[in-house]
Image (tube, rainbow, N blue to C red):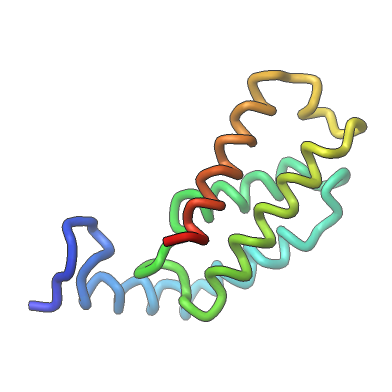
Length: 112
């Protein structure tokens, strides 16, 4: 059996399933397009796209050739949102704290 870890994505069959899912849905392309939108006008959509990377943006799930690029893009866009005082999310300490945690999670994925 091609299992190399305990996580649901840490086996050959699971990796093949995720590859097929991304191939058929083009989810990674949709996320990338969303992350390239204007951060002031589309901050909610960008945060949603970043949340997909928080959940699925890891080796064994996300297409390997795009993972680091998409993680860096999500980090940059979330930081851009937090850095823009005109963005409504900055009015809520709770949302700012949540986005900060999301950025930390995404940064940690770049190291692994």
